Image (cartoon, rainbow, N blue to C red; front, side):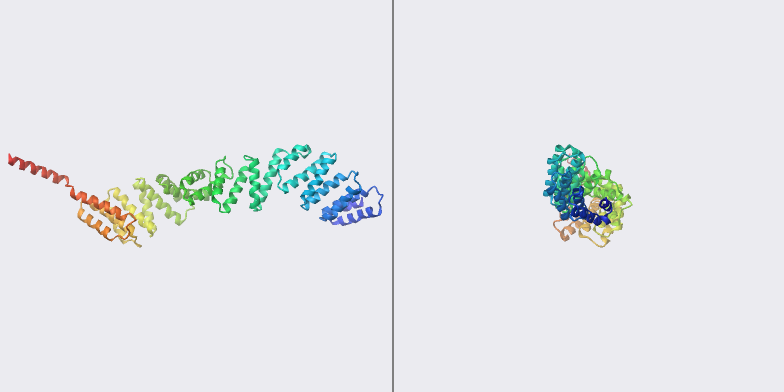
Length: 443
């Protein structure tokens, strides 16, 4: 009783062991001999002195094979060997208990729990199902079996032991493809490949998540998939994911980034109405920065222009032209001139042309484009002489033969020459009158 009392407190466990050893060594015929040996083994186990624990627990099995405590000693030996990661030996002790003894439900559950721990540690989760079928006392449900597969994979992922996590995740998905944790583990698997730069694998798995019912993992799958596809110039594949993400995004930052993605993707795919709509949403967002503000105004202006929504394009093109001196600003200025040409405001076109000529830094391409637009104004004013002269100047002096300027100039020149060769309506009418008068004199 004194030894048992000492055992209640860890700091007095050494006194418990010494008291029990006194019984064992000095009272060989005591009825407390076997319980004392067993308690010594347990005490050493709790102290972490596993080899000493094994020695005393084995003594019961060898010296007192018919004692009621043999089955308990076998269970404790299995637990000690498990803690020492000697799994095969531990398994043999638990199996011996289950095969050789009639056990209470409590003891049976202890032995089967030991086997479960071994199979989980050695990643043989499928063998836990065998325990469930063979030993009802284990009280292992189908849900429990699924959890065992999940917990191993989850633990390895959280520890960032990815090489080991991958087969365990796939093992779970092989057994429970639509299980409770399947979407979560698919997300983990995709994240591993994403972190490793294996974009193809990551995208394929994220798309499986996206195809499933919406969950807490859908948003990340959409964010990463749309971004990866956009960066790979796979705009057609990226677009529906951006569209889906806009309706699911849960934070202002994700909503903002999604709209930027929609703006860019639609513009690159020449879906100009959608690009303009996305750009205007971006411009209203409080998270916008200076660089994106320039880009959004530029896209909105060009998108509206290319859709023929000329008046709607004007404020965005003006803003872009006024707020960037770079090439994008020159393009916006020229496009603005194109807008006014389409609106038949030739005076405004000429003013904008003069601005382009004075703009710094100067870009040969946009100066040439502006000159060609000036030529169109001259044609509209029927000043074919000056129009032809300007076109010839461009064709004789423009340095790049491949960027489309020379081809456009050549086309306009052909139009000018055709107009010069075609008599206008007044001249045709005058000729008819002359012909009629001359015909009358002949009669």
